Image 1 (cartoon, rainbow, N blue to C red):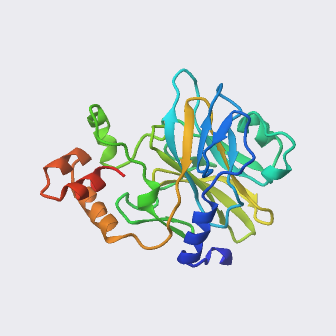
Image 2 (cartoon, rainbow, N blue to C red):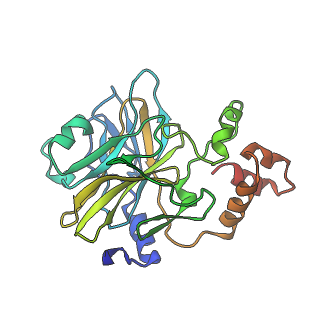
Image 3 (tube, rainbow, N blue to C red):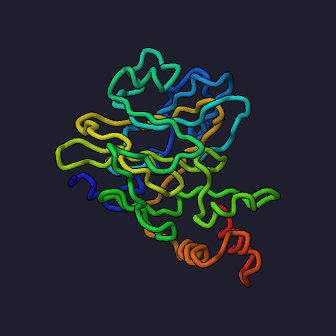
Length: 273
């Protein structure tokens, strides 16, 4: 567990450098020039992507859903693998079951109703209230603001206002943010955690080896067409961010922000990113 005592500045620098996709990926994936956006250009499969580097303990690999594609069943799949992408002779067509069947891989499908993961009969508990500035997972402390996806207010956005009381999107919606990390345990193994819009889903896999490098797995599958890596800053939240958290805590829903006597830029910042 001592590995988690990484200085915030060092973790932030590492996360910025690692917030890219590996050049090895599925045959239907196209990366942009920065390797931060992955788009599936054909079919519904062969959309496997990996983090450019192995993750450090407690380091989250976070993506935002940028584009959806109608007509397919299924959504984004996320997890970790101990296989170095460079060592794969052929990138599997699917993360589930192909990559998982190779062993040392833990992947879960994200669903519309994805909420809490039940682990061996016990329900994972919420890690703090949604307006608290940090998400705590084991000994890992991550600024929550970057983790939360928000849609831009629009013609039909009022339909989701009940969800915006928590300021979160449905898991598979456009602009939803989904991340994966691992937290080492006293027995030398690690637990994998999936984070959806600032909520820790609890340990979704246990007993991961910490003696081997672990890469993030992002399967741009079916109705998920394009995702972008979001760099995570492990430093302190800005004053602007803290103001937004306080405002969001005290409003009925985000559209009520329009009626507040605030500068337009601050209103916009409070409503969406």
